[in-house]
Length: 429
Ligand code: PMP
Image (tube, rainbow, N blue to C red; front, side):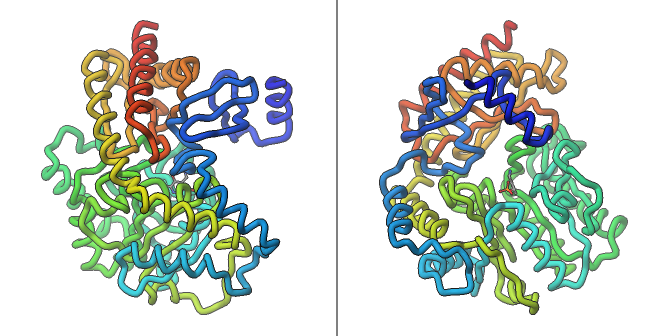
């Protein structure tokens, strides 16, 4: 049955749509933080659909909100009419953004959100030049592949955006590794200044960054790096886009938005993933003059539709009412501490890093070189033991943990035990 579905998948879906696991699984049901596959096996889910299920599965409040919307029969998707939940959600996100007078535009994905942010900022500044971090991931359409600085994920070189890449992303292995936080920040700022004068004509539209790189391997820059960047960017009038697709909604524990760790308010933020708790919704929140930089009509037919905004509003209310940001901080700290202890015991663990419920484990060989084989062994080993995790990083050697933010202490302990067992067998295999 599973094999037949795999064969059909491979016949009709693109080759580049990679599947996890030597024996890919079909997930058919979920409750809380656990999912069940079509063979009846249950897993604790520590990747949550790449951070989409921010709250978890089968949460009654969310299901009820979506069902109530369905029951009205009003699932009119076009945004040509007033949609109450869309306006309410936009008001809430605008306020939470901290951006004065912010306006919000809803999309269906993170890619579309970043495409919109790039269109708005390039239009506002009348420039097609953009700065991005090395090893970034911002999406899979034409402008966003251009600002994606990771060869494995930049699917096309034909982007119309002119991009210059700067340091500050993958600190563990970049040229400035090994420096103290403040020396690292100074080196990155120096590099930014240098790129501006040697690689651009100065009239750059925007700088785009993930506060913690997601696909790139959960790389955490030192707090304050982006504040130091912003000072330079402000001298040139360059707009700051914070891509909060993975770091938004309190997942990093300390702050509601990942950029909060840097004490700056960006001009534009983009979001997606967790907001819909599984439903497709993304968007852009921006300073009003940037949002309204385009004058032609523009529409996303499905963006901010009644069903998605009803689900998203319920998700946002739930995570605020239950202080899931606080839970992410508390359990994230526990996981990070536990994993660092595990890391001390195994040479194959090169680095454990993260913030809140966004934790990366970088696996290495005896010489410290990236070990994608060890990461694959941990991915398979955790699945065999009933835990789903993610994989990523420039060298595909980073295990990524991002469970639903409703995680319990008992589940965190269970995951720690499974991870240690899988790391142990990867180390000895
Ligand atoms: N930005 C970041 C930081 C992401 O992690 C992703 C998705 N992995 C995207 C943008 C693109 O989002 P989507 O897949 O919803 O288009």
